[in-house]
Image (cartoon, rainbow, N blue to C red; front, side, top):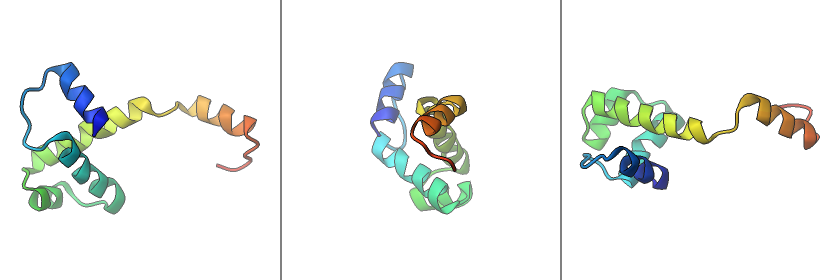
Length: 84
């Protein structure tokens, strides 16, 4: 939620249907259970397009924070991990 909050402040977003904590929930449901955007919209009171946008935006923010493949492989080698 903090990541979403900082992103909204950086882009100057003034209003959204869900607050950052509430936006994180449908994203987690989509990633964990594979719910469709239609199902997310129905469950969280969003349109299908808004559910899609929230998931895309949050996944983009999370992926920007994750280590790149080369970095992850080097760290795994240093840590003695033979299988990933």
